[in-house]
Image 1 (tube, rainbow, N blue to C red):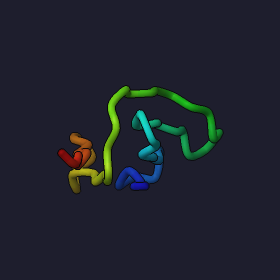
Image 2: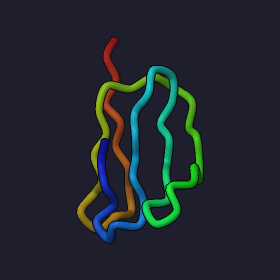
Image 3: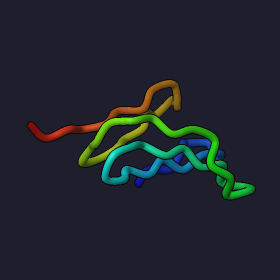
Length: 54
């Protein structure tokens, strides 16, 4: 799990997708398919990095 630098979004890695959640409303804003192991946000908030295992 990672929090956007300005606190607006939470990024959560699940078994088969990355879920983007609006931190204020807890509404799911996006689902990105693909399994990952970890998530990180660039300090300026412009990029989301997902690690994957092979």
